[in-house]
Structure formats: C-alpha cells, structure tokens
Image 1 (spheres, rainbow, N blue to C red):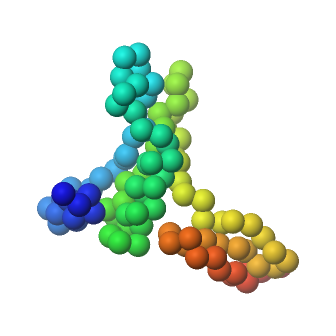
Image 2: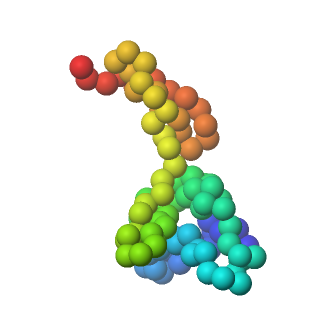
Length: 100
C-alpha cells in the first residue's frame, strides 16, 4: 500500500506522526536496518505531498545519552553573491535574493 496514502488515512483520524527513528545498530539486527539516506528520501517524498503536520521528524537517537538529533534533507545548496541557492524536493535549483 502507498505509504503516503497510509499516512493520510492516519492523519485524517488525528494520528500525528511525530518521529521517524533510524534503527539503532543492535547486534543481530543488521538485516533490518536501512541506510540513513533512505529515511531522508522518505521525508523528502512526504514533503509537498501531504500536510506539514503529517510529516514526522526523522531522528537518530545518539548513543550514550546524546539525545535525538534531527536528520533533514539539505535544501540550502549554497550562496552566490547576495542570493541563496535552494533546491526543492524535486531537485530543481532556485536563486532567492537574501538581504545584505
């Protein structure tokens, strides 16, 4: 079933996804883990296709009590003069005039 459809159905029933956790490296469970990039890909796919309230925070729970660290897609690509270079969820590049 389409994951975006499932999230929409849950969200319609007021179930708000808060976190999407990266699976911890636990001995014997390596076959269940996915790359961090896959989590970023999922978040990018959700943005722009569903309400912002229905997009969870993708986090890694840092070892040794380091806390939850948000992992977000990189949309600010760089700076050119006074312009900020941005990339949208589809990979299109845009220049946005920044203040001096």
